Length: 95
Image 1: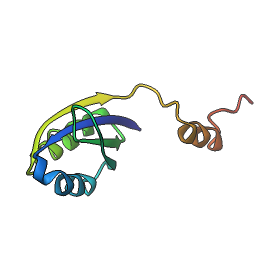
Image 2: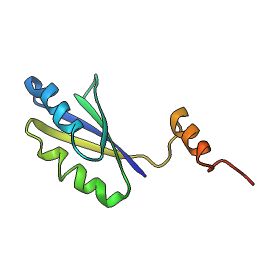
Image 3: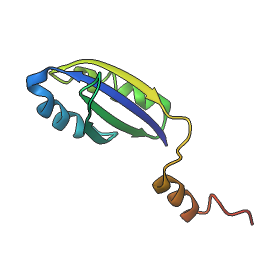
């Protein structure tokens, strides 16, 4: 599974609408309203790197109201949730 963090600038009066539309895109697991330079952050989780191109420039960038995106691809997951899931499927077993 490939995870990408996509920062999104949106038209100010359409942030909520953009967030809802982006959240409905296949491959987008979550969308957050955030503070700082960007308005939204979308978590994209897809099986392959090639699918990031389908989701980000192919779908997210085409949503009406999206002005700009910046995408960061994650190399490793260190969250408690992801680590617990890995151990529960046997990735942490040394047998």
